[in-house]
Length: 320
Image 1: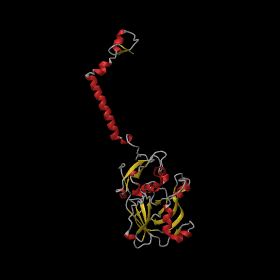
Image 2: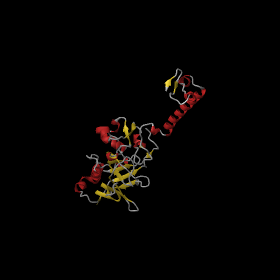
Image 3: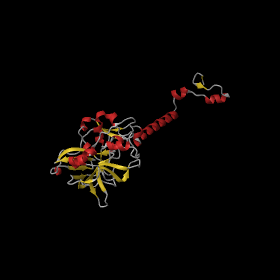
Image 4: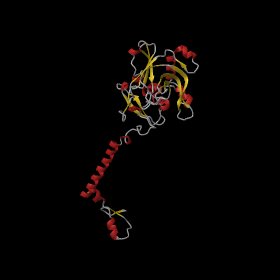
C-alpha cells in the first residue's frame, strides 16, 4: 500500500481496473463522511450501549464484584440471611478470595467475626460471602439475647434458643450468663419448638443415622445433651457440630467445637472455639462433670430449655 496524493492504493495489482476498484480514499471516508456512513456509525454506537446496559441489568455479577451463586450449592452467601439483631449494625458483604481466612482477614478479631456470621473456620472458604462489620467494636460483645429473661428468673439454669437468630442463651436466675451461635434444623427437619428439659448427657455421643462427609464414620456429637424424644422415638440433642453459618441439621442443635473438628477432619490446627464443652459443663454442673466417664447418663432435674421462633429469612440476593 503506497500513497498516491489523495489517499492510499494497493501496489502490484493485476490490472488498472482492479486498481481503481480497490482504491481506498481515507479523506473521503473519515474527513467527509456520507449520510450512509453516519447512519452506520450511529447504529454501531446504539448497539454498543445496548450490550453494556444489558450486561449490567440482566447479569450484574459479570461486571461487579464476585458473589456466591444461589444456584451453586458449593458456594454460600451468608449476607442473604436476615437476622433482626443485625438491623442496627452497619456491615458489608465480603467475598472470600483465595488465600483468605478469618485469621488473615481480621487478626485477633476473627473470633468475633466468626460468631457474628455463625460460622466456624472450617467452613470459611474461598467462593463464599460473609458479613463484615464496618466497625469491629460493634460486634465485640455481640449477642441477640436479652441481658435478662423474666421466665428464667426462678431457675438457677435456664436455656433459651432463638431459632430466628440461630443463637442460644444460658441464663442464671433470669440473667444472661453467656450465649453462643447455634445451628438448628433445616426446612423439612425443623428443630421442635416449645418448652423442654435437659434429660440426659453423653460426652462421647455419635449419630445412629448420619455419617461424616467422608462416609467412613458415624457423625460425632460430642458433649451431647438430650432434650426431646418424639413419638417416633427420634431423639433431639444439643451437641458439638460443624457450623456453616446457617440452619443445617436434621433437627438437633449444633454449637461450636473445634477440638472435635480437629480430631475428625484435621482442621483447624489449633482449636479455639469450645462452646459445646462450655455449655455441657454448665448444664450438668461441676460435680457430674468431674465424675463424667463419657458414657450416657440420665440428668436429674436438668435445666429447662425453651425453643422459640422460626427459621431466619433467606433473601433472594444480598442487601449489601
